[in-house]
Amino acid sequence: MRLSIGSMMIDPDSSALPVGELLRQAVAHHHAGRLWDAERLYRLILQREPRHSESYFYLALLWQEKGRPLEEEVCYRQAVEIRPDFAEAFNNLGFLLSEQGRWEEAEVCSRRALEIRPDYVDSCVCLGNNLHRQGRNGEAELYFRRALAIDSNCFAACINLGHLQKSIHLELAELWYRQAMVIHPDSSEVYYHLGSLLLLQGRLDDAESIYLQAISLAFDHFVGHAYRDLAIIAWLRDDWGRARGIVDCLTRYNHYKDDLFFWVKDLVVHQVVPGGVKKPDSRGLEKLFIIGDSHVLSVHGNDLQGPWGLMTANAYYVRGVRMWDLAMSESNERKLYFMSLLSRLPPDSVVMFVVGEIDCRPHGGMFKTAQKRAVGRSFLACLAEIIACTVEGYLEWLSMAVAMHHFKNIVVHGINATNYTILVRKEDEEKATDYLEFLQSVNRQLEQKVLERGWYFLDAYAATRTEEGVNNRRWDLDGVHLKPEFYHQAHAWIKSPP
Image (tube, rainbow, N blue to C red; front, side, top):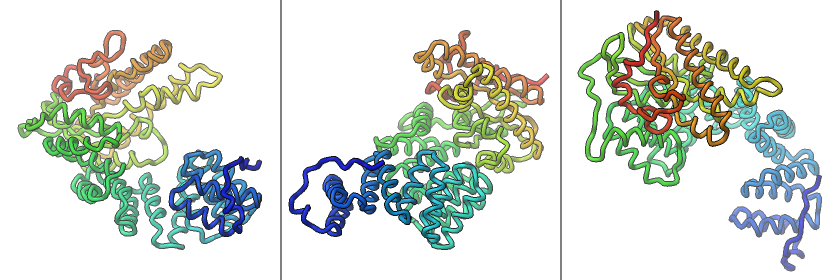
């Protein structure tokens, strides 16, 4: 298939120039951001020389800048059809296909680029990324290391080795991120990833140090994340006034959009009034350690009464953790974070796990997975299998993890009723009914299997649902998370093992 050149107004003076000069001018326009002028000249060249591979290549780059991937792909394919040894075009086509999840096609292109140019660093990195996304980590590591063997200052290889090692070896991930920082000390991306790695291991001082370096750089999305995580660190240190100050500062950047930040902002604003600080009063109580997703931030600092007595919640936050992450047989970064955090806790601790709300979102997690898999079979039967597999796998992994320690008591937090049901109902009444039954089933199975293990169960679902099963709004903060005040009375919904 050949890209249609179309008709454009052509400057008569340009049409008389040699192709080499036209290409030079076109690329100059392109680099200066004058895309219309560049496109005009690329098309003029192709009218005169329809098999001019470089013009197709540069047109592909132009389409990339304009966000038109279909035209971009067509141009790259034209370039490599005309010139089968065009390594740069094969490399870029491989990257484009990889970004679209077309792994096998992308791999073929990257390998072809390396056949043509064995020392092509970009293709080593592109192929490594492709393999990593497919879970072929051993092969991916070989190509990242090959890139570094060619260029020891390859930033992309170092940072991607950090990403890869996060699911295998946290200490090695940290080393690779720090090496990437040495190579590119002005990269907000690597500061954010290293800070996040440290934060999610509970190393608040180390994470804060890295994030403070990040926010000295020009503001971008990663710097915004660093501010957000600094607010979380201040919150976890009970420095609520500083958390409020950071939130107010970040709010001024109107173009920064992040769901987690909006939740942190809601929590901080709810608890901390301007000009004053409402700090938790722990009164020297023993600590109840809380590990889990963003819901732990609501629990943190509150005094919780339970069969174990009155204790103050001390939270460890693992961003985005799902029951599914812990239920998987393969190693992953969130399992490693959990193991790292558990190793920091003193013996005879009481530990609460707050995981599962993300698994129960209607447009993701178990419900969405069942919709995708229920092709030619009952949706509800498929959903029941996924619930059973996920809940059992999650609790089985927790059992293994805590068995390595001598904790006094284990508490598992149930899934609260959220406003998601209202959103689902607007789309489909029948789907909303299925979703209500799904959320009830998850909590029922969690409760049963938790109590069978001799652990305690905090039935947040019973506390937050109406008779119909929707959010009763009593403890609702943002439609998903609970107000901290809920935990002052949570003892009423703690169930003990028989």
